[in-house]
Image 1 (tube, rainbow, N blue to C red):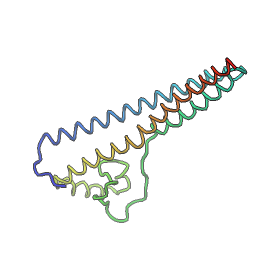
Image 2 (image 1 turned 120 degrees about the horizontal axis):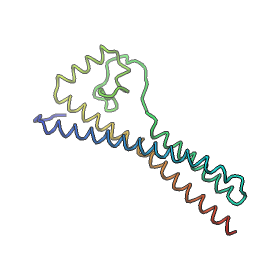
Image 3 (image 1 turned 45 degrees about the vertical axis):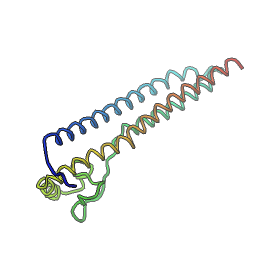
Image 4 (image 1 turned 135 degrees about the vertical axis):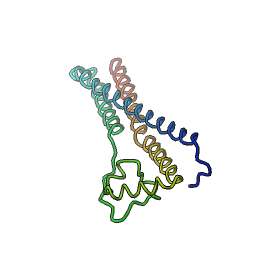
Length: 175
């Protein structure tokens, strides 16, 4: 990667993009926590309806969907950190899956390896920008593929559970 002219506006753009990604990650965590809480509260509230013949199936359905909601929300909030073996050779700084700025990547390195890799990167301003851009890219991939995917699934399961159990209850009431 070649940056022809380094300037403050590039640094500001990278800083703002990082901050935006952190905000999106925080929002996803809050939404996952909200879904965990709501679904967890719905389960004990629904258990009272298990003993009524008319609402038994609707309650079981709602509880089942709440459990699925909890699982998806927990997956969204659960941190994913790659743990691996120590590197036999130095880190491959050109590998896009390796992020020198993320602790999940550099913890497989010794301090000496990490320090040398940071020194190499920091002495090349193009490498500094590339490393920061790689970090933004991997954060975005993580948000899209993991956090927001599972938050969305938790919402969908919760909505499906409410609609399905309500439909079952209504049909059962008029049958």
